[in-house]
Image (cartoon, rainbow, N blue to C red):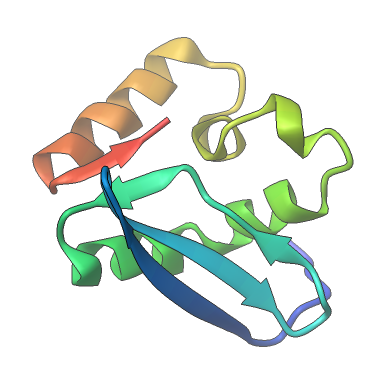
Length: 95
């Protein structure tokens, strides 16, 4: 996958649902991945693992319509469920 960013910064914040993140890419785009965890380190790991998909979501003009999980697994509902269940085992909620 080709991207226009070289680096990114992750800002973590605590909400009533757990830790959430804002990802700021060096090219000016900002992503708000639908990834939440009570474990801050695990949240960062998932963001790092799926940074290209988070970037794709952040740069997509239709991004309000699709979750981060969609960018990871596409239209395949079974695959989305697999990713979601694996994440839950790691203490991470993805939508």
